Amino acid sequence: MAKKWISSKYSGIRYWQHPTRKHGVKFDKYYTIRHQKDGKRVEEGLGWSSNGWTEQKAVLVLAELKQAETTGRGETSLKERRATVRAKKRKEKINALTFANFFIETYYPQAQANKAVKTCVREEIFFRLWIGPVIGDKPLNKVSPLHLERIKKNMGDAGRAPRSIHYCLAVIRQVFNLAGNLSLYDGDNPVNKVKKPNEDNKRTRYLTTEEATILLQTLKSRVPQLHDMALLSLHTGMRAGELFNLKWGNVDLDNGIIMVVDTKSGRNRAAYLTTETRAMLELRGQREPSDLVFTDKKGRRIKELTNPFSRIVKDLDFNDGIKDRRQRFCFHTLRHTFASRLVQGGTGIYVVRDLLGHSTIAMTERYSHLSDGSRRDAILNMEQTLARQKKKVIRIHPTT
Image 1 (tube, rainbow, N blue to C red):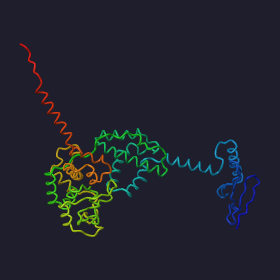
Image 2: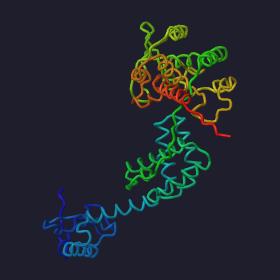
Image 3: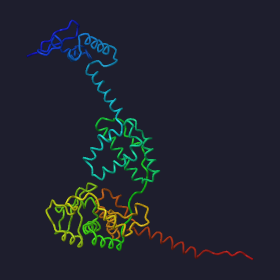
Image 4: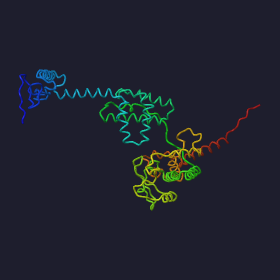
C-alpha cells in the first residue's frame, strides 16, 4: 500500500503514519523535511516519533539547515550533518586507539594467519621488549619519529645489531601501514622519517674444503638427514627454507636438475645436481611428486633446523672465539661456500647470480673479490716498485 503523506502545520515538514505500530495512543509517525540545497529542492528523512522526533524538533532542524544555506557556514543537509558525526566518531576512535591495542587485537592476529611461526615469534619479542615499553600506550596518531629514535637508542645501548634495529623498525612500519589500510590512521608513516643505522651486514664466512669435509662426515655419522640437507646446500646453494619446501615433483634425477620454486627472491631457478648429490637423493628413495624430500620425524614439513645441528657446530668449534656474527658459521654458510667455490673456480659473476637466484647482481658482487686477481696484482706491483726505489736511495753519512 502506498504511503499517505500528511502535511504538517509547519511549512516544509510532513509525515506518514505507520498503519499498525503505535507510539503511545497514536500511530507512530515518520517525519521528513523539505528545503533548498544549492538551488535544488531536496527532501530528507528525520525519523520516527517513537525515536523522539516531533514536529517542533523538525522545525528547529529545518531552521538550522536554512540558516547554514544562507550564511554558508555549517552543514546544509542532514546527509552532511550525519557525515560530520561519523567523521567525529571515527576521529575519537582513532584518538583512543593505542599502538598496543592495535598490535595485539588486529596486527598480530593477521600476522599469525599469514606469516611463518618463527617470524611471528620474533615480532612479538620485538614488541614486548622494545616497542611496547616506548609507544605501547600511545595513540597511533601521537607516535612521533622521536619515539622511534628512542627505541633505536635503547636497542643500540643494549648491544643489539643494526640489522635487529632495522627489523624492529620494519615491524613498526608494517603496523602503521595496516592501520592506514584499515582507515584507522591517516597520517604519514613515522618510520619514513627515521634514519636507519648503517652496517655492512652481509655474511662473509665460507668453509674451507677441510672444514666442509669434517662437517659432512660428522653429520652423516650423527644425523644422516642433516648430512643430506647440508650436502645439497653445499653443492647447489639452496637455502634452508628451499630445502624444507622441496618436493619430489621438483626433482629430475634423470637429467640431474632440481627446480627451486617459491624462493625468497620470488624467482624460480634450476639447481644442477652433482654426482654426489644425485647419488644421495637416489638413496633416499624417490616417492610421490607431492611428497616432501625432507621431513621431520612425523613426516611433516620441517619448520626450522633442529638442535643437533647447533650442537654439532659447537662440538666442531667452528665458531670458537668468533664474535662478529658475519663470520659465525650457520647453515646459510653452506650457500656462501657454494658461491665462493664457483667464483674461485672461474665462474662468471652473472652465472653465479643465476645459480644463486639473486634478484640483483649487487647481491652477488660480494664474492667478486675472490676472483679478481687484478687488485692483488696491483698491490704486488706497488710492493715491487717500492723495493726498487729503496735500492736507489743514496745514504748520506754524517761527517765526523
